[in-house]
Length: 161
Image (cartoon, rainbow, N blue to C red; front, side):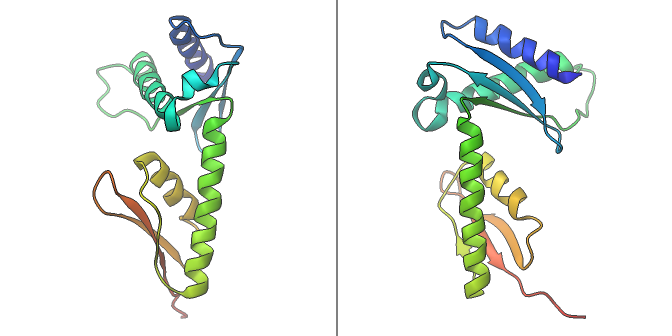
């Protein structure tokens, strides 16, 4: 239901730019996250340095779509997650974060100690927290102040009953 409205909104936003887009598709994951995939021959303009342009476009797209899907009278809006991805940049970034998180968690488990990750954005920290949430003997928390806030992966011994 939302997929068509999201695709139309994103396509309309993209039509206002001089950038050439080959394809726009929208899927919904099992966790309720909507993925909008954009294919283009000019990804560097969409992505920008370290994904800054794409991050800004994601923010704008979420705000535009939230306003069009949910009424202003509704005080409680349902959880709505949208990720706009250009040429699989976001997907590859998330896969890379999960790989790093897995290695850090294994290291924390092996050495039975806490491991700190490099500072990262709130969205990247969220990916790490969600990915490691169900791992045995592992707890995560964020530490530090922006812009140097980071994930701490803690080893936790399970208590035998």
